[in-house]
Length: 346
Length: 171
Image 1 (cartoon, each protein chain N blue to C red):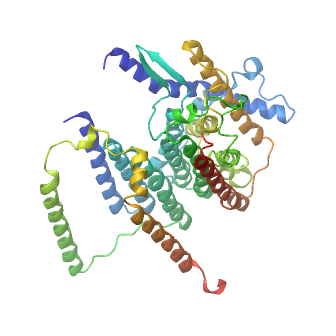
Image 2: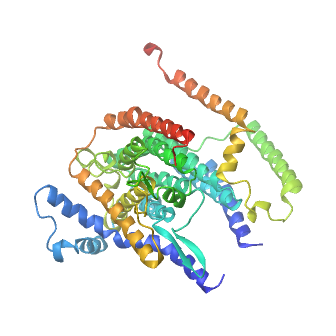
């Protein structure tokens, strides 16, 4: 490997992580301003224009706070838990393609951290590990509220993971590949000249199940039972303070961005724009911006839903997951199998 | 000894080490966590043996689902740490010593016949039968019967567990 190869390899590893860290303050700001908008109040508006520097002020505050580890906790696991949560959130983005292939020195490089053959399985593997961060935080805190939060989270994530992967299986079946770059490339072009060939149209049920399940997987309202503040104080992060709390906080927003990007990739054509053929560096930049815009829409829906809907009860959550979403996801899988068998897909 | 081989050996050593931690640790929650690390190291070994599909399934199914369920049950029941048991009877000590000796001898014999060669496993370099399509084709043609038999076995276990857990008065 010469210097260019090393440079390209380093860029491919660093760009997804750095990009996500750079855009991370945007949803945090959007959440608070959006909450203000929906609740008919200004929201943060003192730090910088439109309160844009509020996330920076928050970060500084988290650094300045006292880092407290309560007595009678399991110190090792207590410190490890937020690290697992943030690690599994940050590494998931590596397999999501964010642009078309770039040609450097006559070789093509797809714009994705790692174009692995098991792309989507890798993603599900890491998201299923993210539950350990929450469960261990709950257990090691030695606090009954934290423990209940951790237990709820593990039950919830296992239940909804099933529906989520079954819904995603429809996309895999249609694409004939686990590789996310191929999932995107099968969705380019149009049907009848004006309908984009996005998976959301033939697999609308699959999309609905998948999107509802992502709310449960990220512990967001209306499925934020693990941290239900009215009954559990703060749930699994009750005992956390300072930067360890900030790590859970960041992990939640990173997860939000990642599942939004995944929804876009699986059901809304990823970086592709119908009727636009990306060419050269301009094409790369336009495609990356298209991807960013599509993802931003879904991140906004996360925020919109949080400040609009009330929280579910726990039995309602379980009933929805097992008795509604899972059968619908299986139905969707049958439907896609029928379409593929008939040769109408892709 | 290539870098791949080094990583493979490290992953294998980690898997064995944490499997031992799982057995000897007195805290059941820590035991489960040791098993998670062990399974993860095993997944790394699978990747290096050019079987990324098996590696991903290993992490999703075992580390991501089954062990989370273990953890869930342990936390729900709040299982306490095992206390140190009183001195066991001499016959127990003799028997366990003999078991360790037999197992060690068997392991040594196995290593001498198979593992003693220093050659690299073939899959390190070549792309083995790891492709998803190849695996599924094998699963649904050559191994179809055993595959289906396994799913029936799992179903039977599920029904059995349900029958055992159900209380008589609810029948």
